[in-house]
Image (cartoon, rainbow, N blue to C red; front, side, top):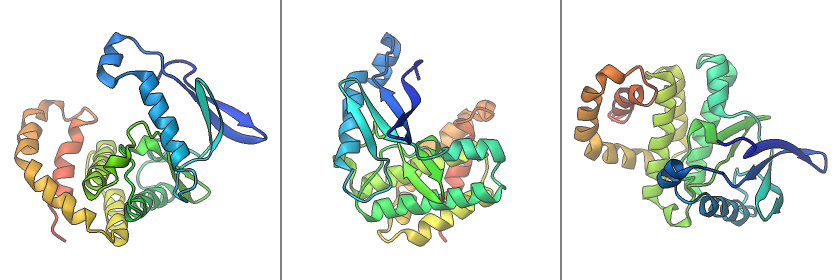
Length: 226
């Protein structure tokens, strides 16, 4: 992110984060799209979800080129990297994150890109942030499936394997899954398996890279019929 785009602040005594329009060069503009459009889409998403009683942060203030969100604590990614997957607090946070994602889906909403860096943990509560990819049209079972795959892809990218933390998060999502999203994701992965298996083989020399090391455990995780 560019300097000054996201900064800590305080509004009426409450800790928050100010987010501004990202200033990017031509390459990132071509990759990510118009930053003003993405900024306005995210602002609209937060405002539209304020009264939905869902785990999204409150908008504390806004202006023409910024909005301020209530602080929601550290992200799951930062906790995992700081303490490792075996730390009890990290395990609790991952379980809570997976459960909260299932309940978000149960309510009929998709996040759009629930990476671990977009899920916060504070005082035993999960909060989803970074809604640049949120779109109401993705609030469908298909959108829930992609949410689920993204969440576990990112978790497997962090661990590089299926360990107790990954299995705990899997069990938590499945226990709270009232809409059959996990079996739908298994079916989706079945369709993707030939291409992903080939990609896993082709990228074996790169498996030390974060994203590539997620492929094999993700395939295994969603091949388990239990």
